[in-house]
Image (tube, rainbow, N blue to C red):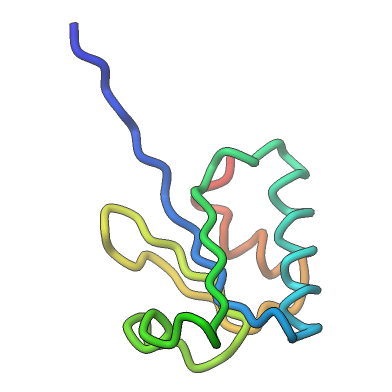
Length: 97
């Protein structure tokens, strides 16, 4: 019998380390993932827009902060400038338990 590996979707958080808005969104995201014990739902990647300009361009990011879901090597969703926990939870709902 062979083991089946299920890859988790990637949650790419495009942010700026100097942005208060990015820090607030990171807090909202943490609350959403902790609420229903969804810590392991996503592989989370934090991308500082200043340090990773090529990724920002490749993903077509125009606003910081932005959340992007990548599944099976394809962008499955994008949420620019989330305004709170409800908006983030609604965006992530298809993947949350």
